[in-house]
Image (cartoon, rainbow, N blue to C red; front, side, top):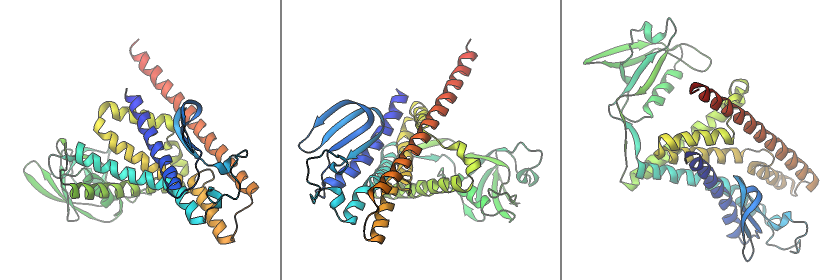
Length: 365
């Protein structure tokens, strides 16, 4: 059931994306002849007055079809309600609406998480030092820091019970390589003041400690709507920023981060684990994937929404669109590359998953 829950989450996010395109088109009177959730063989379809609605065998995808793409369409080519005959702004709204829908939906998911499930908080303020780095020597060990110490403040920044305080502390350390950082530490009933100088590493400063929330992690629903909207907005901003940083690291450190790129099998595996162990976090998982879908789709790459927006930008600058043969060639090449990447990730992750299952089976033989 957990695997089905993860697949259902992805299917809903794809549905939201395609609904964004569909609603943006229909609200402007633009003709839409196909709305499909999934790819491959049709499992169910319904023919409306203008649009064919279908559910297909493979739910990890979808599309909105326009008569512009049908060579045998009986609609006159000069019909003003065809997408290609609309002004650039109208077309840009339709193309970008899927991304906008995913971002709005992610925000609503986070607000739902805050309001119904609650937000995780530590039972005690501060950041717990769970362990020291296994190296013989580390900055923290040399400064006399011990496992079980609680960091109450760093450079006069007090830490509360929010789980994000761990990331805040890490940022302080990373942003001060080679510079002294003043820590206020609780050790039992004692309060200590310790100065550490993070090592100057290429990925940022480090002092050689493992961190954890202080005390038990509990969820407290936020009943005030205004507060829930505000917390949801803060978390949304954090996830968007984190996602952009991830893509930035993928580009600047491709050799080191390429192996971390996840395909549909890995995403379903992660979602399945969350659904099995912590159902409440499915809202957060869905919001994170929705934001990733939005940012990926807005990249100016062929076969993605961003690629089509790039064509519109060129059209606006030139005063006329690029020739169809050029657009089709670029889009087809991009589609082949994306499909190739998707197939590669599926094969790689399926192989890894099979190896893991075989290893687990050997344990019980």
